[in-house]
Length: 64
Image 1: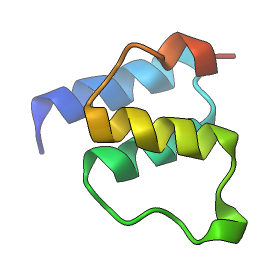
Image 2: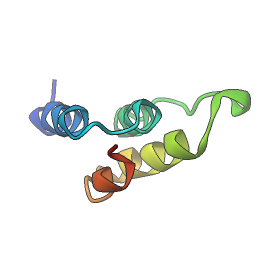
Image 3: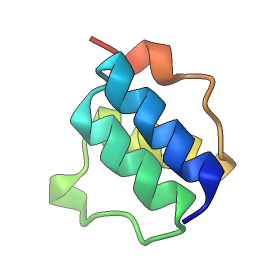
Image 4: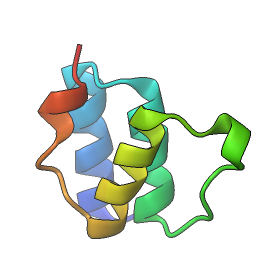
């Protein structure tokens, strides 16, 4: 597994980021298809967008 991906996921978990954001970020980063419409929420969509961009800038916005 890519070290950047591992470090980013570890950082999100340590920060206490929203689980939906983390799952979205992982899916976007790995270029998986987005969830079906009824299972998508704001946190997931934001994580997916950041993951596609390989961005770690918004983690703090989703931390508890």
